[in-house]
Image (cartoon, rainbow, N blue to C red; front, side, top):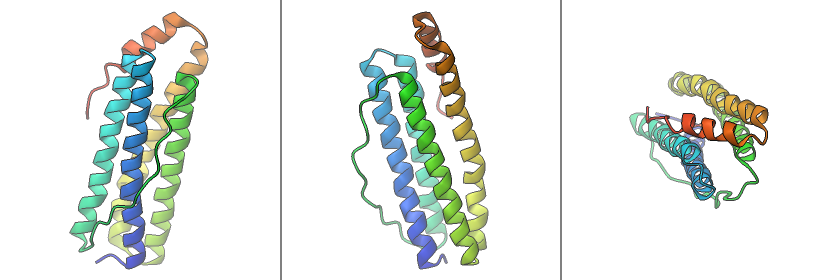
Length: 164
Ligand code: FEO
């Protein structure tokens, strides 16, 4: 059984993961609107992955005898100046998610909730990957600058991303 405190944190995290999915879908929509279908595909895959993260926590809450209560969330941002700005935003968002995971982990430790502590280790590792993959794209976009040919190539490459 999870404590009320940990349960509240896990429920909030379900909401944040769903919001992440919503935000990445909004980013996909931006890319579709500026005719970068490969970038849009990449974001749509990411949006699905975030729903998977939410469901992982959802299922854990029930495995531990809790009840999922979904929080509300705000409208996601829908306009950006450039692909670089989108990925910089995604990177900041992933750092925010990482900090949330660390803070839930800290609370689980204080509550001596060893099962949640162990469960969250998957997310600790996943966040390292999530931050890295976005940061790599930020750096590539920085190098590309205004190169239309470079952007075309990167769009083709990102469009190959498949669901995990
Ligand atoms: Fe579920 Fe991208 O963090």
